[in-house]
Image 1: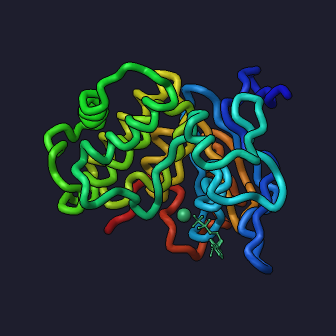
Image 2: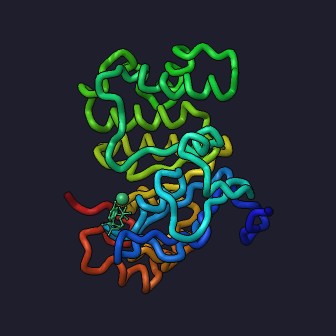
Length: 261
Ligand SMILES: Nc1ncnc2c1ncn2[C@@H]1O[C@H](COP(=O)(O)OP(=O)(O)O)[C@@H](O)[C@H]1O
Ligand SMILES: [Mg+2]
């Protein structure tokens, strides 16, 4: 099967096509489609409960959709396990931090390096490789510390390092700036950009609008499980349907500035 050609002719690296997920009577997702290309950061935004995390669960294989499919580089992977998808190159971080608190930062990353080593059968040295990934996300200094004792922002970077250690082709980031201070947030933004320059495809769920607007080339907007808008940050910001979806919610305003605390 060939992947959908996007507007400028580049094939999507990852697509979710027509995804529907129901929880009892509630449709958490209704016929939602998103796509991301190599070297692109795509935002997925929408009010609380819009279905963003559920879509990530479907893409990485934690939840089977009631309808629709997930396509990686033209191949339908909807029936594949979480583990198989990880091996195919889909990595993610979680809205609610998922790390091994009792393990050191470097051992958290090493778990993922060891997985990759088994897949690749490559002769890498796991500890050195894990240390290099920590260096890349800027937290080499805490390599030996137990993650449970680290500040939230640093622990989130450990989780990001663990995702990167599998050498992914698609990275799903669920609220990466939550728990990070402004300088950590801008470091993560710079890091994500450089990963994309290296050809990674990034799908980003984020409530910090200035972060999303700065970093994303395209944005999809979910509201009550439906994609209500797609386009450049500029297009999305002025879209009346998007503005209406955000009215009356706690979410950040669509003016591109950080909310006052
Ligand atoms: N495991 C679940 N069981 C029942 N309802 C759920 C479950 N997970 C999410 N939901 C509901 O699905 C909707 C979408 O949730 P979610 O994907 O977490 O939204 P978002 O990440 O955009 O805030 C919400 O109404 C939420 O309450
Ligand atoms: Mg969520």
